[in-house]
Length: 270
Image: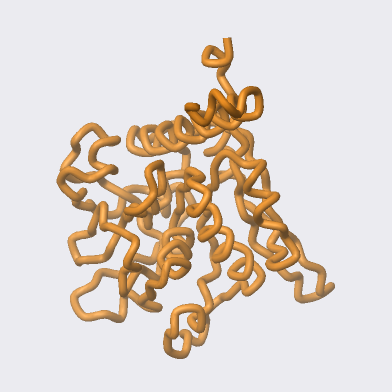
């Protein structure tokens, strides 16, 4: 029976474009922690999306996918996308990624595709929907420094850094079993400033930094988090629940597509 099949969802993962300064060659890159989190945490098959910008046919691409994971990155969204001021002197950008992910996010949400956005991803989600960013959170009065200590080994950089308070009655609190607060890691220099109109806050740090959001006007799974739940996803109960919920939404999407392709009349409810 169709409803007894456990579908393997195809989950798109956009890449960064890393240019080698010596050769000038570009490399489309996705960290293996994101690939592993899709396989181990969400139970899906990652489909890496090159940073090709307008050269991609987004409608055809999204028609074949069952979910979208927008990853973190060393780079930041270029501030001209949200009418931001001059960037910090050491700001790392990736215009090819911006040209890919910003329209990709908008089209994915219009299709109702399950979406999970992480770190740079939550910032891209906010910008794609009309919000803006703080370019240096640590320079704001009353804010903590959310950047990681780069002198530490990677496992220590991804360790718990501070608590966040979950919005009472929110989607994130619900999927985390009603928790009021959780401990998260912190490896970001930028964060949401003006919240996009379509977004609702799902979690906030003690200093007021927005740590999680959901898209309000879509019926399915569409969440963004500022921390890194993909790091050793199976070792963290919060990360396991988050990726399990994302994976379940992607499998439901895959099942729905399969039913529609098999019997369009049945899928329409006619």
